[in-house]
Length: 140
Figure 1 (cartoon, rainbow, N blue to C red):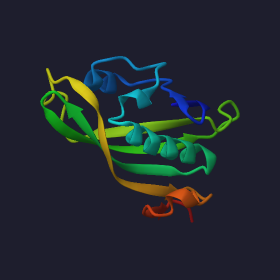
Figure 2: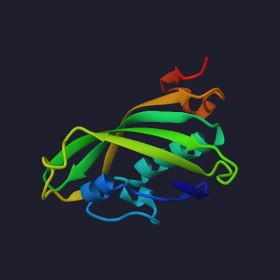
Figure 3: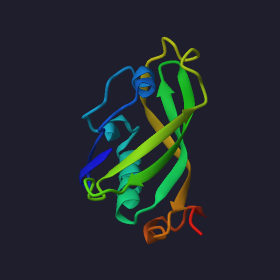
Figure 4: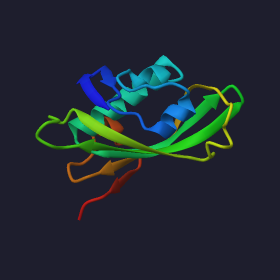
């Protein structure tokens, strides 16, 4: 994901399994348009900006809403820090509770509720606005 400003993030590269699960190629698009509601989008924007501004990480789970019900995806978000990124990029890894075989023919509709977020302190702390969330320290 790449941040263009605090409200605009685009997907730089979407993996083939994500494309298969979502039924659409989202590379170059605003991934946040897949959120369930304006409140969910707002919550996700806070997490995305925090990962880049602090920097810190976050892990948790999202409901994945389809035309045949809901399944779940765990995620890990970490900032990318290198000269070219200017702290404007991060990557997300998903782990799904249902195989692609199990969801064959299912149509993804949107991301549902964000659940069980844990902030990951990478050495710079976590933002005060997210201090209510559990924190795991990943540095000595």
